[in-house]
Amino acid sequence: MAGEIPDLVAEVRTGTGKGAARQARREGYVPGIVYGGGKDPLPINVNFNMLLKRLKQGRFLSTLYNLKVEGQEDVRVICRNVQRDIVKDLPTHLDLMRLRRTSRINLYIHVDFINHDKAPGLKRGGVMTIVRPEVELEVTAGDIPESITVDLTGKQIGDVIHIGDVILPEGARPTIERNFVIANITAPAGFIGGDEPAEGEGEA
Image 1 (tube, one colour):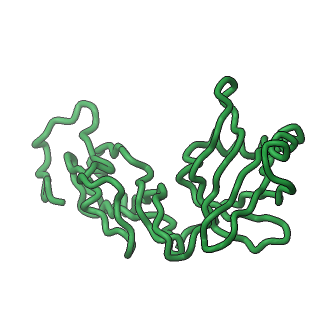
Image 2: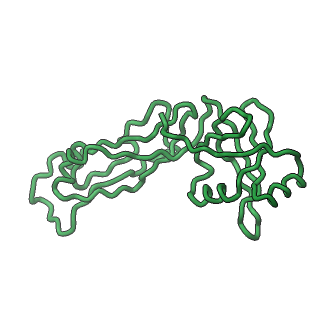
Image 3: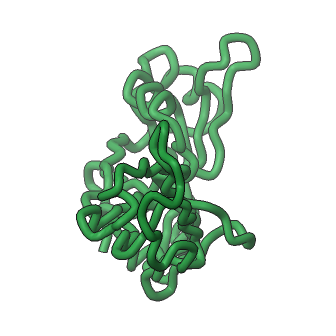
């Protein structure tokens, strides 16, 4: 299961329409709406500075959040749209979608590399280059993996690790159809091939 899902704190927005939205902005909030999940839409306000910080961290639209609103049950949401001021490029409104546990969503999942000490290529001084420290996967909202694991056991200099080489958690699948590269092991500077037998070189 996933690790800690970050909280997104909001307040219920009283009143609707442009007047209420303008008032929210004057008070340092960004108005928004929460919809989906078989429930009525809920107008909310989110602290402007907090939202701006989240946006600057990146991947706001592909991060699952635990929405906390006083007087409401916590609910998992994902942002579907952030409207911005066309001049200042600052957020002016956001749309959040409630997720059922069975909802399928795209999220970036961290890649863990294990058994470095069992990789002959690394023991011989090879250098591992991580191409994708995170991989975008389509997962079920109620069963989000904390990470995916790449086992380096037996990996040699020259080996390339593709997404197809990784055992993914049940129900998860890559959002990209091609067999893309996650990492590779390259020779160290000054390495001359053939000094040692490269047993299993090229094996997956």
